[in-house]
Amino acid sequence: MKKGRNELLASEEKNLAPYAVSSRNPGEREYEEPEHPYRLPFQRDRDRIIHSHAFKRLDYKTQVFVYSEGDHFRNRLTHTLEVAGISKTISKVLGLNEDLSETIALAHDLGHSPFGHAGQEALSELMRGKGGFEHNKQSLRVVQKLERRYPEFPGLNLCGETLLGIMKHGGDYEKSDLLDIRRGLGPSLEAMVVDSSDEITYSAHDLEDGLESGLLELSDVKQLKVWKRMEEALPKSIFSDKDSISRSLGRVILNLMVSDLIDSIDTNLKKFLIHTREDVALAFQNQKKIVQFSEGFQEEFRELKSFLFGNLYRHPEVSRMSERGKETIFLLFKHFESHPESIPESYRKREEEEGRMRVICDYIAGMTDRYAIEKLKREGILWFPY
Image (cartoon, rainbow, N blue to C red; front, side, top):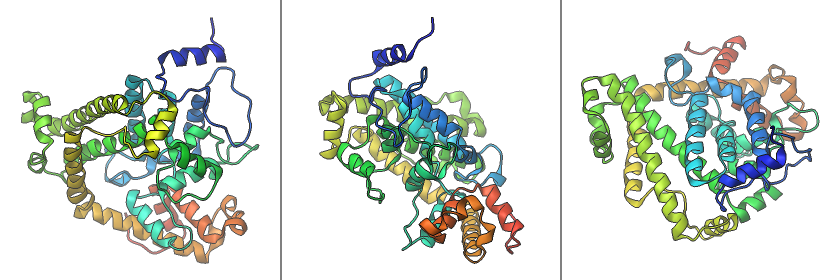
């Protein structure tokens, strides 16, 4: 017997904790739409994100290594899928709304520029004093305005709770009703879980990719405080094979971080007397952090992030790739300023409303690494080969 909307809602609520976000209260869509007969609101949001152009382009956007460096390193799409998987796991254990967590995770990097954080730095510099650029704000801009899949409205017309989850606390967002709600209500626990899952994912997997690439040395990793935990969790048989060690380390530290976070959240829910979505909002307003590692693990995690920053993200080889990416964006931006006819008409028609600089920024931010390099060549801009 098939389940209708009411049966699906009832089935969902059997598994939801009282502090989770129910699909009965997903937050309003900006443009009114009839409910779907057999997909709940966050499932519809998830599907809209997966079918978007911005999501497809994540496949050729840099995580740490540009696509030309190898086929087995993470890119922005594989990272996003890993964040979604971890977010769903944590949400399931804690009785949160898995559909909402997965949806926020799938959307969280839609606004990321090509060439990873180097690309963001370049666009941020180019847009200084002109509205700025920050990838979280751009992700919100993508789903609210830039995607054009529906003739009835701009963007994807996502639920309010999905949009609130995409927004980052403290971001310089434009004044709006959504911003007022975000400041008052704060993020859901599902959104907080996604934020932490993002950090967990890139820390574990950047460590793994760094070791596999040879840019990180196992001897240096062994100096980290978290190494003892990892060593105890690793089977002794793998220590004779370098490749097995690097691949196992990512898996083991991922499990350690997720397990610690789940236990810590469970403790904090009891400690802060969290029973409803309103309790979550009150804790947020009073700066009580529910979603965080245990006190001891926080120090080890900070050390790991610092290690990756100093030894991988600032490695000369990564810096070389980053500088190439930044220079590519600088050259493209300057070219489009003086040759606006090279910008697609779908972007150009917004110039009168938003200005040429914002239009150029949107166009470049949406590019993949591969397309940006190809555009550079196609426009005849002299630059070094990749």
